[in-house]
Length: 470
Image (cartoon, rainbow, N blue to C red):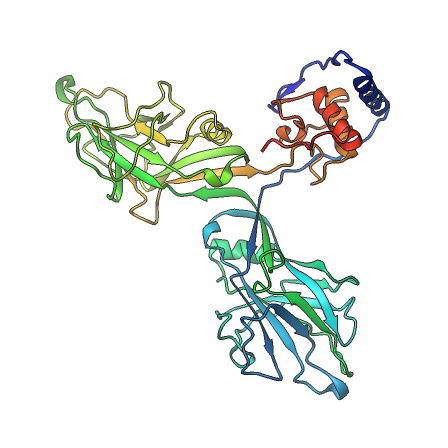
């Protein structure tokens, strides 16, 4: 059987048949084992977020001062009608709030609109082009006459399908990546039909707007694989001022507790905490705590090792002091040596802690950072980091996220017979492992083994329970 580690693989033993139903299930398994199926390596999928538009409207060439920001539809129509006369066009504008994803790593972004009807002529096959806007606008004031400018080249195109009540999709990955990096501004997109018509009854293409409902609102589906979180709480605590709170200060200070002659009472430690609630039941492959080291006082601390411990009780940045500090684990989660240069990031690996927090096996009370390297001389090195109150160089938690469907061993987004075959190839034919490995754990017992194959066969062919670890 395979524990949930990519590096572990053990001999798999068949369970003892416990009745006719189990024997029939095992017959399925034997039949599948006789097949040799070559399968591609599955690929990592990040966490998928779906956003509804914050602003959407259509603009009308023939009514250039009319605003449609409260209407439940978005309408697209080419500008050229009978005899090549212009002035018939309607274009759509759409915008999303991306602020919460600033500096995140996006691997995919798809703009999706619900195509529900057409008028005058069937638009099937007509290509609608999407352009990035280059100035801002508001859905309640935008009209044809004050519409924002847009890029000269389209970001993406999509042909109108034959069937209505379907989603149309435009790839906006490059735009969204640039918006999140700050290299271009997020003013949304401009959608139009620039395929010359020049006849009566120009095809009119209708999409749902956000005013229709949240189910069929324009959507932006983004896949995030690396995310940066900022702390909800950070503070330092002072042994020599045990009732003093520092929760509003722009710095975090670390200092060993032992000064001249070995006297104690000089220490300052740091506490830091992040909100992980939105990642419950996600698979985290990496988590790094980063602090911006900007200066030192009294003695150069280069090479001193700072240890990070997970807290075992809760605390609040506006009330925590040395005297009421939370307890912490006896063993450090991670350590990091102070570099020679200031104005650099220091980093602690907290992957194991974050994984345990998300699984609920330990509580998320954040971490306690300290310097326990005995000094015993005057002028104890004082190490300064930026706190969240400073702003620009706030502490951060960088996490790599992999979403998965329990039982979807092949990673194609569907639980089907292909996943049974995939698991058999992995367990018995040295085939590729599911990625993440936990995706192969269909029965959610923490182990990828023949039991998961049987569970999937029962689900797919015998009305058994749906794989679900939520």
